[in-house]
Length: 217
Image (cartoon, rainbow, N blue to C red):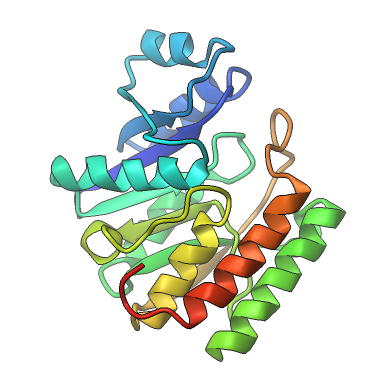
């Protein structure tokens, strides 16, 4: 399946070149979807000849949605997105792709013991909420490593911020899409986390709202 890797970025100068190199070793096409980086991220992307698209708004959700839009326009069947902080293993991407002919979304599920304590608690809380509301048994609904079938998700997302992963998960469950989680290692990120305390509530609100929506966002 024709695949595009999307790297959402916002001031990732310390990790961007390493992430580009890792994706290139997989032999996959790649784009960067940026949010007005001012730290040299864009210069490094240009030096490495990676196409850069700017988001239409502020927040990670805008980045993922822009990536899906570009993937669809350019004829890609699958989009992989992965956080650009070197925390998720790019070497797991081929395994996620191998499962996609059977599934509509595959997710790199972290061992929560590898996640920083506060973020671990938040992730467990969000995942338990999804499991309770949708009657499923997922393990990591906030994972930032996913492979999606473009035609399944395009036009169904409207999240703007860090609630995008929760919305993707809920949309998939609500529409009966087939999901498969794959255990992956999780490493210490390069750079500082951009998620804030209020995002915890935003993600929770997103989960609850999505449970009672219809098929369209």
